Length: 251
Length: 166
Image (cartoon, rainbow over all chains, first blue to last red; front, side, top):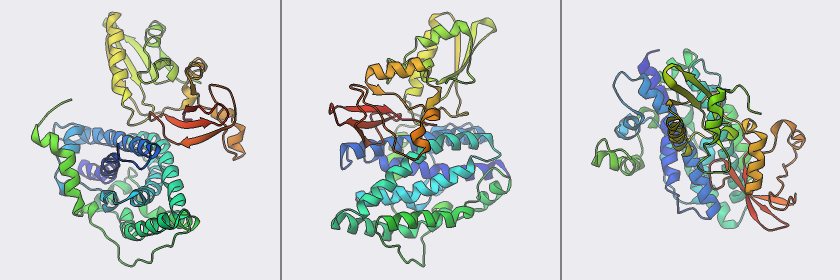
């Protein structure tokens, strides 16, 4: 396992938190109710905080003289290794909740494994993040039940979001060559080991929410190799605007 | 309780005078975020702090406040953020919990002695204003990362609950 393997592995985890954090921070001041607005921005803050811990570690590992800000703001689209799920737009509240729940369950299971990594940095970040993510999972799961088992309209919108976003779930379990090397070294996680448990968990909740499980044969993929959907460029242009316009600016 | 902290007694009083920027009735010592503070040769001081939440925006301010306070006392401080072991509300002192309650924020339940949690029942958070146990959760998330929002059904006040993190 080389340093480059390790850095690419970290991108595969941390970029999910960064992009989803950026996505849900778009809800600041736009949440459907004050409580959900505050909840979503709280979760965005947790995710961005976790991202910082990972990126600080990347800066340490890198042979170049870089900081966490360079990692977050100065990479190009192809260099981001987040899954396609987290970059999907905030179409409506049902999409936001379904996307969050699909990710939160995966995130929780990943961190549960990463907690036992041989790498002390991963152990520490995972232990810290788990406490936060268990709150996220409870929030998104409760809302998904409420939407599915709610009114005619909320049920129909929740079902549409589930049907549309299901195609992005399989990619969560793809392992790149970097992932495999880092997992073999005992630092990273072989995510395929909890794939069955993942689908069991989300299927059980969807049933409880009286929603149907989509029957999908073809899944979308690409994000883990840097090939993103059309939404990614817009996120990056929003996020990187200040650094690109005023290079090296500081608060 | 505050476990495994290693704070030199000369520094304890100084650090105790540094308040949490978001909950000013609570000192950073009572909050349990200071994990160690050591005096080194040449009046240098090394302080290790741990965040309550990963994205807690108060951590930078806490770091700066510690430096300012120690510099005032003639020390050359160095503040380091550590993640492990992860902060838990069990590290908050009894004094801190009382200060929170007097301030109108329900303190975190003592996780170890909370029998309700063991039996799988819902936790009852008493209202910090009127002590009533007739309260309900409004939102898992409150005005800062560390708090949840509750409402008392008797006095009808909404109040913050310092989330139990174990």
